[in-house]
Image 1 (cartoon, each protein chain N blue to C red):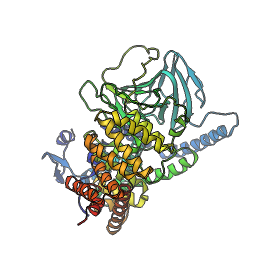
Image 2 (cartoon, rainbow over the protein chains, first blue to last red):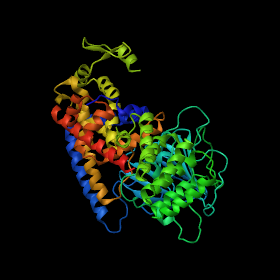
Image 3 (cartoon, helix red, strand yellow):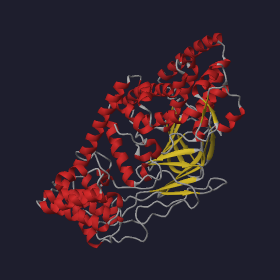
Length: 412
Length: 205
């Protein structure tokens, strides 16, 4: 078995120094507790705990009780389903605090011994979570999920966007619209996830100025994690078989009416000092401008809804006038895949992949496009061209992942 | 930082040199001291091995919060059972074995929990890749990750320890509590499965 460098070297640290130090403090605390309790007291403690567990079991089984065992208590009722509204500061039993700004609305989804899950329905809520607590804090919004260990941060679900700011510690923000689906924010960093916006019906699309599907780097020094590259679903290698059931299909409008279309809008990550002072009312972000990558997202959704021919038609129309940029590369690649895999049109697929290669962007899919072009040409009966394309692939990417298939196509 | 602290501490003849040439205390000596109740030695053991244990936990569980719990459990168990460690120099593999056993336990909990609730979307290798990793490499990681998700635990754990964390075959055998021959067999089968998966993915397009 060939030796290779561990993949771990290419990954972000499993736990950073602060997290490891926090774990070490917990280890020390547990050890100190164990050493401080004499064995006789330990047995007494076990008996007390057994009684407590029995008592909790009775409480849980009590039909009127809605409070889970070990639930977090506060100045107000925090049972699942509780709605908290504007503006107030709520002190919790573990030392944590919630601060709701004007018009903010927070709902408790789960409150148990090991987790406290809330949903920010609207407005800005600041969470000051006491580090080292036993509960896993999760803040849900309609655009992303925020996971917390011990930190202070705020979640602002304004009109048109979600903003998460970290004052202290680390949070993880997950969501479909988050770059790479997950972002790790440290103190001073902020992410804005834009809302779904309505676009004009399909037709010739004018790209606005500026690069599509990009995430702005922070103004100051220091890396933002994770690396900010996003690809539409079909552009990454999906598992074989039909597309998985997702929430995409219901978003598609019925034909023949040309309705608004959901657009994918990039998230913004910023680093820098956070605003101090009292919580401001929820900010109203201006609706983001449509961006040309919408055509790829729309086509992807159409394919997921079984309307591959329409997707191909829209991509073709877009490519007729599109500039030779990254979005056009993605659109051509997707068109090639649809034509080859969904429509059984290898000739059309070969042309689309040729367009991808001519555009030369994005770079990450060039090798794949070259291999797919060779296969499409072969499927279209253009044996000589397919052989040439396969040899081109082998020459350019001698260690490429498709080298086996290309070697078979290239022949002796 | 560790080196500076160590330089101020009395050391026994059992010493090793670290990469900077400074004197560092060997694992065996740290174990001996920790068994004698030396809190400093316990902390040194933690500082030296916690990152590896965290890596094992996170890459197998794919969850940073659960990984932190595993690190805590592993060192609490290790310090509690340090007297049972027959070969103090093999501390690293022994800690890995504890961590892996705790990960298995966590997986069993997850199966029960997910039966009653919804599953969580865990993080893949591509998602936790460093900022400098190229898009092509990121795609490869995603491909490998997809293959790993389909592997049984018996094959996945040795492969992750060997190729993600970078453990030696002997350490993998210790961590997985199986023979060296079994580890080699598991790794070979995992490699075949991953190659097959990647090939199928690529062929399917």
